Image (cartoon, rainbow, N blue to C red):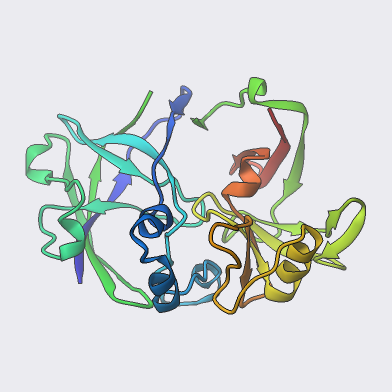
Length: 272
């Protein structure tokens, strides 16, 4: 049981906010260095689709490949945190001083009693995960971003050509309709169309296992029973258990992405 603090961020987007992204060493890399990756992967299989397909419970996902973080400050005076900007989640939450779980010992914790601008909200927040649960206190405070994620601005220096605006097919997530996946002009996946979520909180490009296997075969890769073949052979594709596609960081690194809530659309252009 993790006792955390879910915050309602009081941010005014009358100006542009730029947040430099920090690339850290992933859990996968750390475990590989210690020779523990194979045992960990078999015990905690990776299924990022589950947070989009379950109702009522949000399952804990394996974050072995998460590497991009941004710095924010909460409260007055500021308390600093490194957070993942996850477009697949609706809550901002951080560990609090009231957390007694072992999981909180390795993280910076927020102390609401030391913030002059903090106000308690009404009620608590409880989320039941696939493995464990989280209980948090609702509160309000100011959040200041670091000084590249952009809020309130489109910077054309990061892409070439024009933005291609795609309407959301579902407003629950940043979900769009995808026509197909092609390699060298040949349709290799998503034949006849499919649904895809653009998610900054997922590291890989995830799709149905049969489609991902076909894509891997086109690039000359094969997988073992546990997901990898060879000591250091990895692609950016991951086979899932659902028909839903997730376009994660490996996609976003190639395409400058704009999330426009005013028009409920996503803009894509080739990144430079």
